[in-house]
Amino acid sequence: MLRPVRADRRTQPPRPAAPRGMRLPLVAAAVVAAGLTAACGPSTQPVGSAAPSSASPSAEPPATESATALPEASPTASASASASASATPRPGSSPARAGSAATGTAAKPSRTSSAAKPAAVPGPGYDSSADAQKLVDAALRTAKAEGRTVLLDFGANWCGNCKAADKVFAQPQTSAILGNSYQLVKIDIGGNSSANSALLRKYSPSGGTYTMPVLVVVSPSGTVRTDTHVTGNPPLTAEGINSFLRQWAS
Image (cartoon, rainbow, N blue to C red):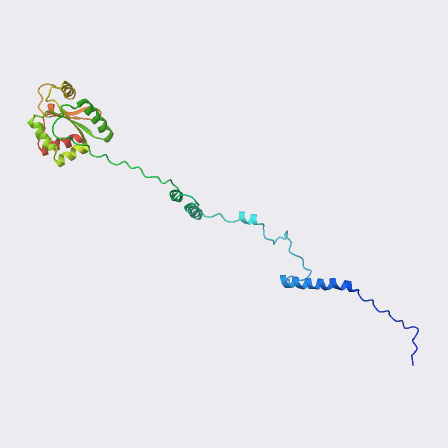
């Protein structure tokens, strides 16, 4: 038996169901949100908090300002860095150039003035065909360039005293003194050479009878320092000639 429905009770109409086409975007949005949460991780900030502003006083300064505020490198560190950079050869550079860059100076060989070699000592005897004036001129130039003195030996091949002096000149000690301190020029005055006789009178102008050998010491400028035609010959022994040579070498 049916009960009568009260007239004052109102029945609420059923809510309309959402169309099927609207359900799909909601599902897709939920899936995308879940994927972002899984990829980025949960947020450490509470929901609704504002992100820190770049204009905040606690924000870090720009990279350029931080670079200018860095302390200057010490001179030692700068020198070490420069040396390390210069010591590393560039690709394609030669080893010589790389070595020059490491030291900072060009690899040039040092120029040290080596001592002049001893002068050659002429052998015994006198060359009558030699141009004595040219020999003297060359000896003066060499003596000036190498800091020596010129020794003129006027003699003759038939002179016994000249032969005795030649034997002493050939001894090692005397030869060393001559080579280190003198340019020796032997001039023949035993023949008929007027040029050689004139050369003798030029460097030994006192004239008269000459006792051979006549030994004349001449400075590189051409000034006569001593003339044995005036002073007399030293003893023609090793001791006498060596003493004479040492005296006038300085």
